[in-house]
Image (cartoon, rainbow, N blue to C red; front, side, top):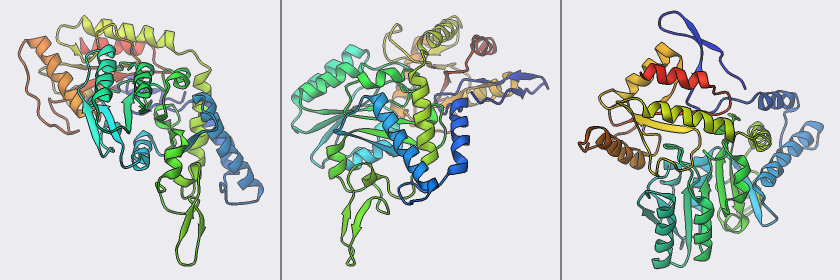
Length: 405
């Protein structure tokens, strides 16, 4: 893991930086940095040359695609497209969804999976995994349009709660619908589960997967993607351009990967995914998660944000509120005086976070709080999020709890 090491505090002391903002962007794995450094001297064009550099880079790029497909368990009828990130992946998929398709999602989603869709049924955020399954089953049973795509998160970037994607996929398929999964937060914590989700489409980002080199993935069934207009018009996406401008577009991943591809990002992402796929991260992470949640619960003026019951399955993400304290100022103080990196905000999931903030404040004070339509600027209508992963220690968790006390 590449880390900054020690950072200076406001009083002049130096401490090991406690990076508890990994859900936003994860640091780079050492193996990823080494792989990139080894490839850089051979950097050349992909799919567009016959020399030694181009041949090697083309091979590395397509091997990265094969690695992703292998980890996801995808077969001949599927495709892997390299994108910029999860947001880019969902916007691509939204362009490819047939015009007569209704998209069903929940208002607990990250904006990447909330905003790109056209014809949408947005279900209320459920109070439990079981309620999510029941709500989707009822919605698909009553829908008027026979063509539907369900799009849902695998793990919340606000609460860390793991959604029952496998069961939601069963419901979707039973009703003849497809399902797309936002795996941006599940992939870094449990990459071994991606192949078993039952998803028709899956999207995630390299920068959350310890490979911060500007690549993401949209992977899944090829038919819609092959039938759609290219996401970007340009070289690589075009198989033939006639003198009169008539264009025959490529099929397969090339159709949506116009221009010079992000070779370094794709190789970095595949390296990280392969590395994490062979590591058991669960035991250490769950121990840290228990330590943090137990410590927060013991603080009298701190309330954790949660949608599902307290015992529901989670990854290493915890958001909380401290009523009466400005979240932006609190996050700044944690960084300046304690060497702790956290995030203050609504986490690009505004409807969910505002709802959970109101509920948490009610639990603490007994008085409902009216929350406004805040943006990402600092203010009371925000929460604090602590998120962790590889490199997080018990000492980092204890320092946060001590600072809050």
